[in-house]
Image 1: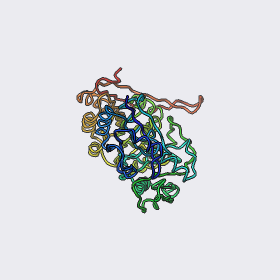
Image 2: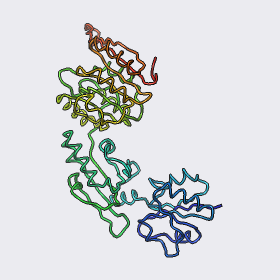
Image 3: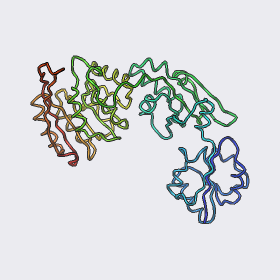
Image 4: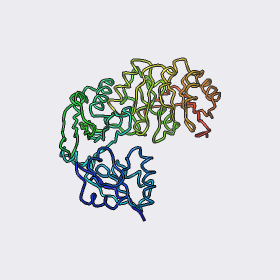
Length: 409
């Protein structure tokens, strides 16, 4: 029965074992980068990309003999190994890993890597870079020709400047290892600004390090005084808890916080479900300033501030799995109609109503837009100790709409 032999390559030569293996194979899978390393009498070559076409050619070649695959470093660490196992199973594959690029980079940086988060940027956009990097004291990035170190550094700088985080702009330190294991190996160290001004080749590992303040905020249960807000305009703690319970947040997905105010709902959602991508829509500059301050203070970069008025600014955003409407600015019919049309199947929309007119209007609007609706009215009473008189807070009605009846009670 024919087999697949997957050899990791580190540096600029093939191992003796790999060269020997090639003599008994009918084909070799190879990238343009490793093609010059093959001997003149190497078997028929199969391009490693596009991957689907390569897998089909490997399957055909296995009918007549063994196949060798050349891969960078450790093929089972962000490599082609996963696709090969998924396609052919584990029975007919043997792996011969080399030192991975991450191991080499950590050796050059003299950095223990048993606790190191790592992130592959191959084929990804830079939209979620801040959320992927800034919460960590250190993170290793696998870059590519599109997500080069200078572009990554520039994108992080842009985000930090947008949110006024000057301290972190100065404190972050970056190291880049280029062309590891080759004659053109180069190590570069500097600030985000230094790296953003430098040009790099396509083969890089990028280490981002920073000193984070002590994590003194809970995952859930922030108090009003811990959240920057103005003139007492913030969703009260008890109401916030019921809103988040009603939203039934998924572990991953997209969450719209429409009329974000101070961003208190977004902050709690980010702490509870770090895999959510959160868009907080706020039209007032005062509220926008509070939201920026809260994002920096809490280090919760999965929150994206969208400055503007709903529903006008919603069209570029990805479709949401969850929506909270905390303010409408008199445009509730437009907002609910637009949000319901974009809400994914199985999604949940929650609107908070202080005014009686909103509590009457919102359920009807949600039903007209195909949502199953239920309502809950909250009356919160507070006192500091048993000797004080209870202080009654304004009642709040939560209107909860579910698409495809998910979450209906």
